[in-house]
Image 1 (tube, rainbow, N blue to C red):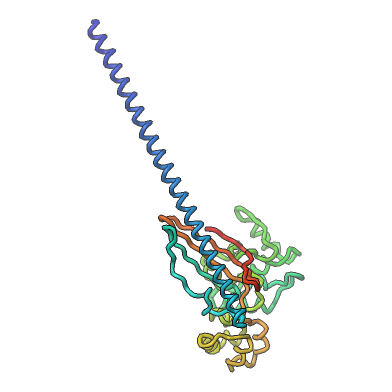
Image 2: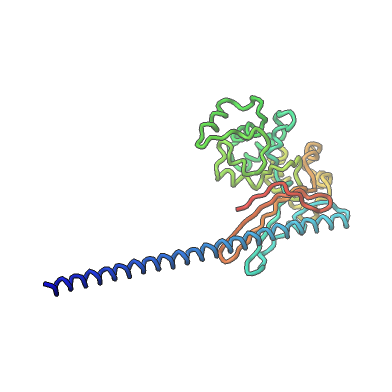
Amino acid sequence: MVTALYRRERGVALLTVLLGIALMTLIIVDFAMSAGLGFVSAANQANELRAYYLARSGVNVGLALLAQDERTDVQTQNPIDTLDDVWALPYPPMTLQGGTVALTIVDETRKLSINSMVDPGSGAPNQQAIQRMEQLFTILDINRDLIQGIVEWITPANGSLSPTGADYYMGLRPPYQPRYGAMPTIGDLQMVKGIDEAVFNRLRQFLTVMPETQVNANTASPQVLASLEPELMANQKIVEEIIAARAIRPFGKADDLINDIPGVAPFRDRLKQVLTTRSDFFTIVGMGTYAGARKIVAGTFHRETSGIGTLATWHED
């Protein structure tokens, strides 16, 4: 009897020891996994931080290229911006500190200004700017009815937005108020009724929110050039002649385009008002990669006559 009781006690003790060892093993494994995950998380955060600063360095390189171009323009007394300028050339990714840096620079003056469709002082629609926008939408095969929603979005809150339009935004989840003023960034366009991701991606390379009242004849795309006048939209050959002429010799001033391209004579005065050969706003996109981590930063800058870039907008991804 005593022997059987002793054996049962030994069995219970052994089971207790085994359970304790199993519990300790689980604790140790959990600790090791937590420590390992913490190390990986810290390493990933460090890599992302390195990638971020590499992207920032790309933006700084872009600012230096813009300043260099401005100095060259001053020295040569030829203040024009073209696709042959140092800032517009493609740059392959650069290796730096174990990571890579890539950058692109695009002048905003090659695009149509969204905010120009409404006069900032009176809030009245700018019919000429709206007509150009309608022509661009037609060229891109995008529903022109969407333009009315954009105009209402940027018009100051003076009762011009129809109750139906206002109710649409307040009925969303979550609801939000229309801007009732100029768009601060191109991303604002995605909040307008009817502008989905597909439409936005097709439009964003042709539109700007910067206060540009003219289009650079040396850098504008064929689509934007064609949208400037109904005659250009109807006659693609004239647009092709403009592209071919500037590839041979960039236009020094708007009059050069008007004089070199005979087809624009009937509407030369209107075209002269909307064309320039100088760009003031530039968007620099820097991308940094490090050990699998990637960061993208984009800044739009106003280039002063001194060559210094003044920040207008900034976005990080």
